[in-house]
Image (cartoon, rainbow, N blue to C red; front, top):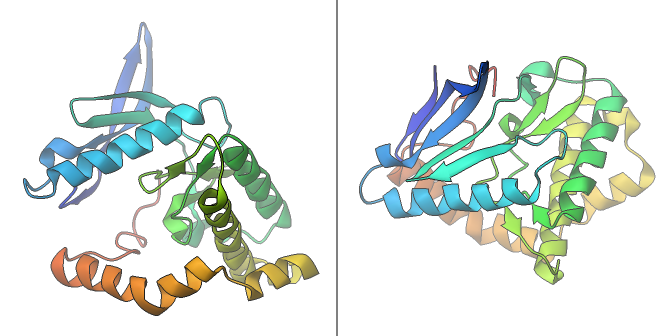
Length: 216
């Protein structure tokens, strides 16, 4: 089943056989990317593979099966994206925050959590995160990593403000009110360039597919 198709390739849900067992996986195929974007598409897939490799064994993060010949295969996580599930239970956001802390301790900053489609709500109400193409992996967790990790948390708190605003603590409200210098620079100039390139040149937007991409 095709989940997505754009200039960077295709994403399908396919069967994965391990001996007699059959499960579903997600297959990101950069071989189908436009020729002029193929090197960049492979770079993003390689970036995701490295992040998932560092996060193996963490519940709420898809397990990496393999990355070979421009094709990334990772586990399928069943759940609804945030904008469809619209979680009102504060336990979801506590679980999501705990998940982010485990991800950050493993030396990975997601760097793309403003997108609601990258957050999943599982059938039992637990949090999961997908799409690590823009993730930063850092063993030393230096200053840039710490800034990006903080922005990961701020993006989660923005979603909490949308769906569960009364559960925000005073400390969380203060964090929402104090974006990093990097974030302010991005919002004032970098995002304008990004929006022009993605929407005018590449023809897609951050929320493309958000209305019908029910499973990930």
